[in-house]
Amino acid sequence: APEAPPDGDGDAPSAPAGVTMPAVRATSPERLARRVTVRVRSLGCGRIGTASGVAVGHRLLVTNRHVVAGADRIELNFWDGTAATARPTIVAVADDLALVRVSRRLPTVATVAEDDPTRGTRVFVVGFPNGGRQSLAWGDVVEYAALEQHPDASPVMRLSAPIVPGNSGGPVLDSSGAVVGVVFGIETATRQGLAVPASAVVDLLERQQDRGEPAPGCP
Image 1 (cartoon, one colour):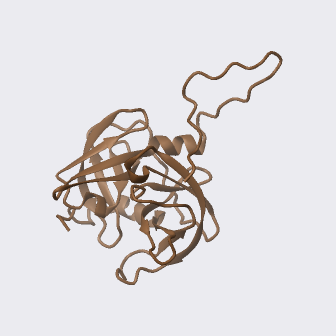
Image 2 (spheres, one colour):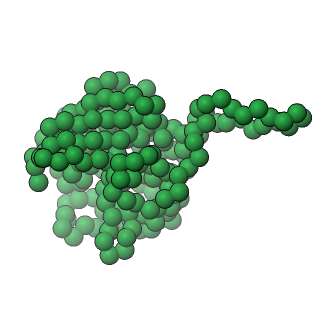
Image 3 (cartoon, helix red, strand yellow):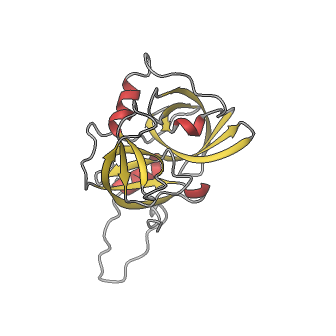
C-alpha cells in the first residue's frame, strides 16, 4: 500500500521570495492517527508476533484477541521512537478484541466513534504491515457481514483498503480521524480486509469491569 507523506515534524522548507507556503495542520486526522497507532510485539508460545494497536485511553490500548493470545510479554513501539511494555487486561467474549494496559502514560488518545460507519463511507487504515514501517491506506466500507463460525460476534466490516499481515489490531478511521473499527484479518475468498466495528470497541470499554475474560493461552 502506498505510504502517506511524512508527518512534517522536522524543519519546514524555506519559501522562495514572494511565495507564501501553506501552514502544516498539526491536528490533521492523518497525523493524529499516526500518533495513536502503535506497533505491538507479542512474545509467547515459542513465537514472536508483530501487529498493531490503537490508544483509546492514556494507559489503555485496543488490539486483537488473537494478537495477545498466549503472550508472556507485550512490547510497544510508538511514532516518536519511544517504547513501553503492556499486559493484557481483558478480551471480548465474542469479538476479536483485547484491551491491554500500558506501562506508561500515552500522551495522544484516539476518539472512538459512537456510531458505526455506513456502507460506502470513506475510511483509512493505519498499521505496521509485516512489522515494517507505519503505513496509511484509504478505502471504503464495502458492506457488513456475519461471521458464520462465530454467530455471537458483531457483524464485521468488509473494507476495500489494502490489508496485509501486521495490520491486525490497527485502527480504521473516518475522515474526521475518529476510530470506526479495528482491523483483524483478511477474507480469503475476496481478499478484502475485515474489521470489528466501533460499537464493539465501545462495548468492551464500557463493560471492562463486568464483562470479558482473561487473555487466552496458547492456541
